[in-house]
Image 1 (cartoon, one colour):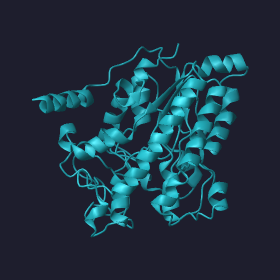
Image 2: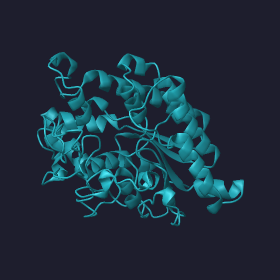
Image 3: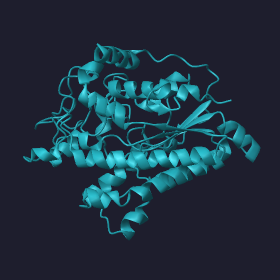
Image 4: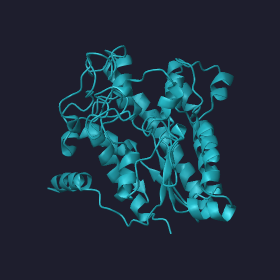
Amino acid sequence: MKSTTLIILSFLLFMEPIQSAPSHAFNSIFSFGDSYADTGNINVLAKNDSLYTDNLPYGMTFFHRPSKRFSDGRLIVDFLAEEFGLPYLKPYLEKNHSFRQGANFAVLGATALDETFFKQHNITRFEDPINNSFSSQLKWFEELKPSLCQTTKECKNYFGKSLFIVGQIEGNDYIVMFSGLLSVKQMMSYVSTIIKSIAGTIKELIDQGARTVVVPGNIPMGCLPSLLTILKSNDSSIYDPKTGCIEKYNTLSRHHNSLLLEAVKKLQIKYPHAKIIYADFYKPVINFIRFPQRFGFTSKPLIVCCGIGGEYNWDQPRMCGTPNVTACQKPLTYVNWDGMHLTEAAYRYVSNSWLKGPYADPPILDAHAN
């Protein structure tokens, strides 16, 4: 009876519609991160190169057209903007927008660590690097700042009423290391360095006047259909029997999140005037995988909605957005969109759990700007 009650309560938590917060809660949102939040910066950096997101079925669910987002519809940052009555964030690099109500600095492939770090440690990327790390995004923020406020007092007042989102981004650092043929054990040795970079970004923003900062953790990387396909093995011992995910990569994610949470707690002590919110990305997603039908997802949650071929419906040469690759008919019943990113349905559940709990400490709705 107890387990049945817990299942019903969990279902109600995630299915409950997001309620509107007071319109004065936040006047703007500033987002830093990677493709989980990018709304078009990579399109500017790619210049004339065509991107998968330029084509349907990307954007099919909500926008009904390609929206420069790596999903079928809205991202977490979009749901947060809706919650506080703000417009969807425009990509900063497009420049030709008013950013008084916020800006998006997130970009596909962004890393917490600079490119110089990877070069110094002889970690070779599988593709040419783009200047898009946290330090680059902070520089873009500094470029924008004079158009928003002038004096220290004015900036602290303005940014004190803003919501800052710092991440998710670190997954790309580990992907770079993976492409450089580092073992999980070797990756583990760099986790503290990555955390230091994230903490440094948070400190910089608080020093600039930020008072409410959301810090998302890492997803369960071992559950990514792309990684599961690349590392497919007949050795059943590498998989978690409860999820079908590769356990050592999920162990890496959990270790990262544990150190990140420690860093956030230290920052909370150092900056008592600020509200620094750790947003758990791992637990909601792992729950989607373990109990998919509880959230309305298909009973095979590791299968990709938009893809083709193989056990997980993902094939690297034939990615979502390329010719002859189609999407599932009901994306709202899928967790994963394209092998690397989540569906709008999954993002909605995660954003709800961050806004009201239990996967944000404290919940965002409890951290209204003064």
